[in-house]
Image (cartoon, rainbow, N blue to C red; front, side):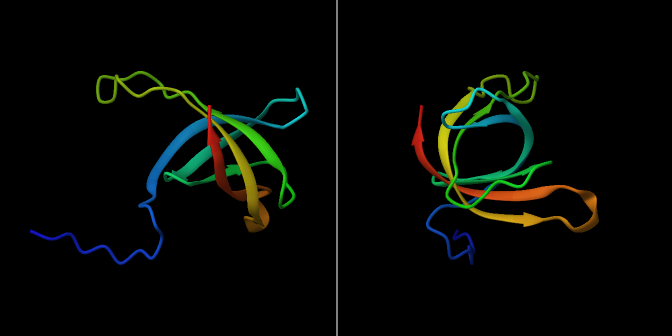
Length: 103
């Protein structure tokens, strides 16, 4: 049985909706966002502020415990922003980043 996978990326992206925290490297100011998808080398999340391309972020996702997924570990990574897009009138930004290291 083969799986038809037409995505052209090196790694499959997992769609998700988990709250995350992030801060710019060198800053102590913690911001909030929502992770939308995640792969072995990249992340996409939404946030209320625009983040310039090239910005290095420390990102933390702490999954909520549930009976469905009780064994998910927290995720801490350093991410370099590669794209920021506005979500139109919603005053939300979509931020795409390359994972440069996992803590």
